[in-house]
Image (cartoon, rainbow, N blue to C red; front, side, top):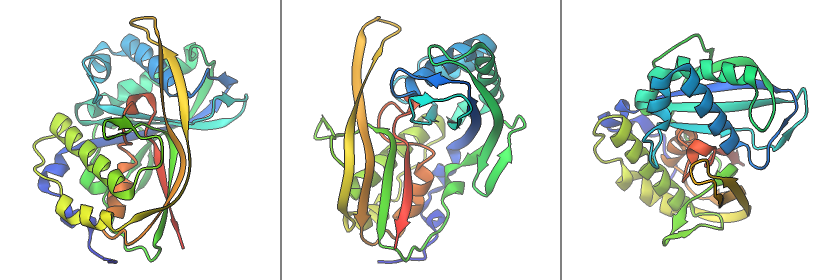
Length: 291
């Protein structure tokens, strides 16, 4: 069923308590070379620089984060960026981490001066604040927008949606890692589950999300085709010095059906990212409507 229902009509008041501040850094490479997928290197560099710039901010973002850190990284996925290449790094802060946005920017400035070990050096050309209504130059703001503010109403005529898993997607089904493209309903379930956990951890009690309205619609959307692969990665643990192996799904999947009120939630969910290791740059995705 196509619908003109405003997605914000489905957002319970508690969702307004989850505050987001997405920063986008426009960078110029001076010859960055990453061992593999660059997310873990960016995370490590940010952590070290943040500890030097503002220990309180480091404690909020990195210490005791468990499996639900108050931020998500979205790097450029290329492992080699020749000198002069433009790239972007998005850092989205959640809840109490939002107040530390200036420290995060200062840490990135320090990292650009000292270099990103072991990848190399880069220059920050611009720092931008993403807002529901557009993009602003970042000038030290310490207040973001609620997740509900990102729920823009849509009534797409298209019935095919392409989802690009631009950084590795790491989710489980039946207690096993999902090695192939997930179904549309599973994507929605993962998104709503992540939003609930983030709201409980970094907002206030949001009550129940509108699963009864969204999931029956999602069940009617089916996986049309997929071109995905499993990206196997490894890194050395700073704590145990052991080599750790992990990975995630990358590529594109096409879904067909009546998206209805689900699309605004998926669009806003790009700021949250999906699955595990979002602090390492995993779970980034984008959407394209196909006519």
